[in-house]
Image (cartoon, rainbow, N blue to C red; front, side, top):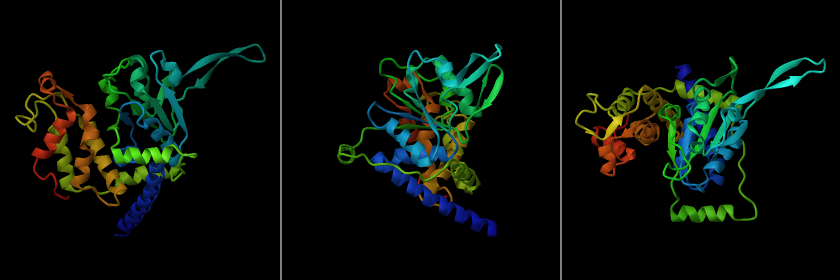
Length: 335
């Protein structure tokens, strides 16, 4: 019982810190409450996030603000068609020492940081995009046969413009699966855009302040994994993830021919973690079915592919997920 009391106290303190962090972030990134919540949930869960939206919606500013609020060292990579893997990972150079001998010296690339911003990641070639695969999964890179660990914690927050725009390359499925969440950043409504105008066109911009540091964030990530999860929440996660896999018993006859491939076990793991994080962000000690349903689309939308027939009907991945949420029993039941 005493250990439960300690856990409750730790969750309460974390919730207070997160409230401070959200307030600081939203002072600069105005009106996008859901986007801020999802990004914080991804980082609290120890994962990476892909922010997708049109240029000029504040994605880059959000990542820059997060580095300040979370107290993390950060680096930024502007992805371009001519970017090479060595520009991300680093390279070895040959030095001539004072005694005339020669030795190779490794110069670290921008990936050696705690919060890496991959700006417009889909503007680089697939070869360069794949340079991040090992870093995102294993938190280390192998260069010239030597394993080199990255910062602790290590998170990638990538921004992406829609594929329909010229000069972009779709991310490989293997790399998409490394992102815990795909967060869609939409145009603000009229009132929000008015608030943005008032907050950002004055003499001084609002400033963010640090609410975490690296050690505190790592402790918060461990705490998230200790939170209890009810059996109803676990079953709901399994229903949603397995229901989006073509050819399974759960999906048979429900989504018909809408999908050609669906989310794997990594999606279920991600959904389990981010529901816990969302619960803390909203002041709760355990996740509910509401948390599962709120995070289902960000977790699964980049881990599914529509069939030709579904695209011809004008369906989107989010439409399929919404149908799954609506048609399954217990969609609004508390855990």
